[in-house]
Length: 122
Image (cartoon, rainbow, N blue to C red; front, side, top):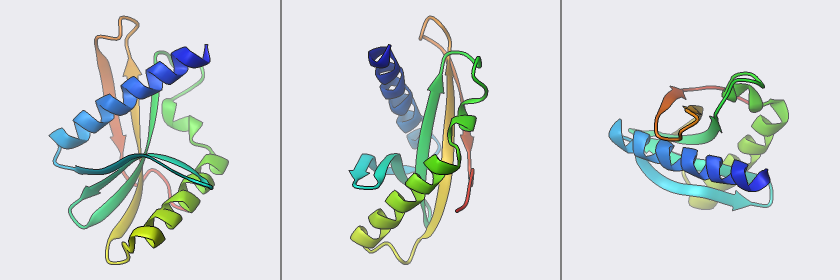
């Protein structure tokens, strides 16, 4: 089960990266990890650094994908982003926290994607 979730997650992140490129974002880093957590995608859109959590699902049995980014997950993302900004001295940029929802059809050949800008603030 976990392996399947990992494969779905990786597929979703690849779809998200392609989508971000297509709308003019540049990708700075994927899967940034440190002691506080992980950020799926760090990208830049004009003068804004976007910390993006990707949630990929194949059904809405457990709600909308973005609902999985609960308060505790947001805090982890914020702390990880803070470390990233400090480490890379990105003080001159605006910071934004986004979520990309991807709903994959059962055949894994088609999907719907939704970018939620400014999905949360901490």
